[in-house]
Length: 315
Image (tube, rainbow, N blue to C red; front, side, top):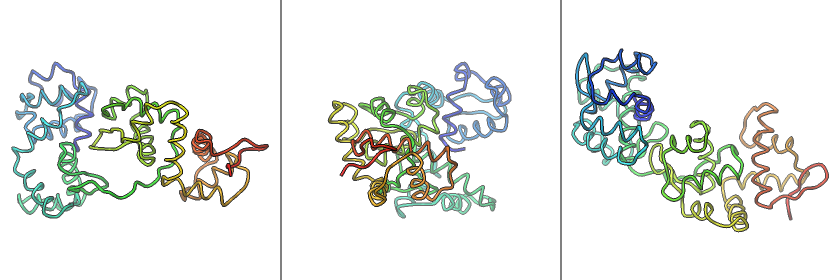
């Protein structure tokens, strides 16, 4: 099981189970969870030395410490998990291979486990599952960067593709203010903002594409220098800085397209342009939704003026 899923389940474990024995069925019933899921959850914790036992289980001292840190959203969980992985041979093996090659696919990690430990896995989905679990754990502890099925020693330096405009500038500023000054985990940020984690991850992708936020490790986000400035500066300067970033970001292609069209901008025309640029077959409602967000960015930046029938780009 990937560490993100493990941590998600850990946050729902009743704290009384951290210092007493339990069976997987007992804890599954207490959590209202699927028994198969909890079996996999406990097996993953056991493989990391965070839980011990056979039919009945108990959190180890590092396991209880790790669980409490995850439950309370406190820093230090990564260090506890790193300490555990340092005791386990196959993590050392994958770290060594990663240092040699610079990057490993999750299938390569799974195949390495088969070769080294004489496993019988043949199904590609099994190789993928074990490889992804190991990669996600190393990413969480800070050794490597796992994205898109690849564990890399160094973070990719390629530019981030421009995500679909997913939020207003006002929501973006709220996110930046919540991340100021030291950043935060996505689950805590979602709770503070009252936003679903999945939606927030898409909103954060827009903030990253504009250069305001950095994804420094799995599930943790922090502000760039520009993001810190935007979170704290006065409104007039904030609008100017946002406009500068928008014009120089990957979204500049959309702005150039609008200039080339040289017509009245409406939600309908802007929605059509967005659908063409992203090569998507969106419904009229979806086109309008994304058009409203991007028009919000343009208006906030002072890049459009209101005219009869819609908006026009400033000369």
